[in-house]
Length: 99
Image (cartoon, rainbow, N blue to C red):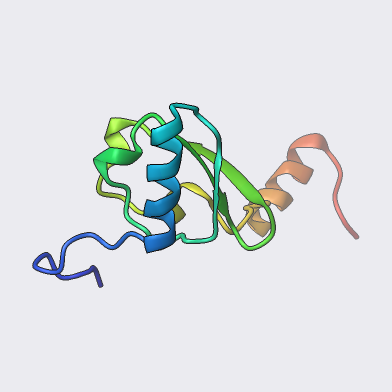
């Protein structure tokens, strides 16, 4: 369930402070954050964030199309290997089977 519209977007206060500090200097440093629940606002456009996915930091460059989404949507937490049916189909295609 999403956040109520009358409350407005949630952005971690410490993240807003980091943004203000970086914009004041004019540099384009990568901002490290653990706040996957923070919504992307127009002030973030053109900046690069390192979003923690639970194991490592994923680099995310913010574009205009991302505004309104959450940072966590762009740093996936699960790696998809292969469905077991696809694994068996690959073995049949190559001529090897398990016995």
